[in-house]
Length: 410
Image 1 (cartoon, rainbow, N blue to C red):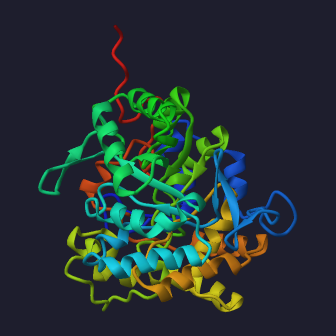
Image 2 (cartoon, helix red, strand yellow; image 1 turned 60 degrees about the vertical axis):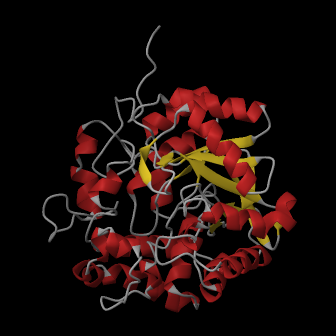
């Protein structure tokens, strides 16, 4: 599991010690045998990981299933087109980049109303209009966006979900949203009401599939009982293992797909960010004070990149490609969605599908990871406060209803 300090930032917790000493274990939470097998790199069949469907290719990529939704084995995250690590891309360049992702074989594109806000959806809609029938488009609702374009908390009121759906359909230039995620769990609205609203939109032909983002097991179970959850999109990467505690086991149990966001560790796992890296003035990683992007953390976390670099040297690949190949080899229901603003980075990312990691390679990576330490939490406290119970190491939704309130009995 991820190692990080809660109260003593100069220290980290080893993965082995965490598994044996975690308070979650004391609460009676156990990792499933299936997940433990996946964590140790043991394939279900043979020496190669059973992570691809070689008899089915779309656009040059193998396909995978997120629940009942078939997508290419890698998607393209479109957040960076609008914000996060720098200023918004020029519209023409952004459209070209999205189309270049399509030409590279990607048929799964991920965006959200709040990216910009609205700008990313607009770009995705225009860029993919000529290929709309060939692609799967995912977008998200759930942030309270002001008329001035700022965000003030969360809202998943049914009327807001409907409003966002109508506006997203227009920006995306489509008549149906393939996958509609709740971006963050709303602590004021029962998740059953959210799922029920999506069910109505599906009946109306405006949405095809329902997803959750940064949700824990209790919320996932409640939502799935009301209407099938197709995919859960939580942060997950070689150095961010929070979802292994309770989210991945429940996804596997219920047949729900898993879409790791930030599969390259916000760029750090590519090995291209040094302690002297010059971040853009608009860069979220430093502006919002992400703990792993202080100069100290960038220095202390270098051994994690070194693990990836050693494997990359063996495979004739890059650390970033090993990071993505590691996810692809992890479980067949995982579909990473790396994003970028640069065509050369896009080509490098999608080159990861050619990197084969054997069970021996996976064991080597996990063994080395278990000896290393990750310095710093994965996000600032105000970001973590918007995450559901059980989706961060150190929290559990066991015995709770998650952050979403229960329906009031009439």
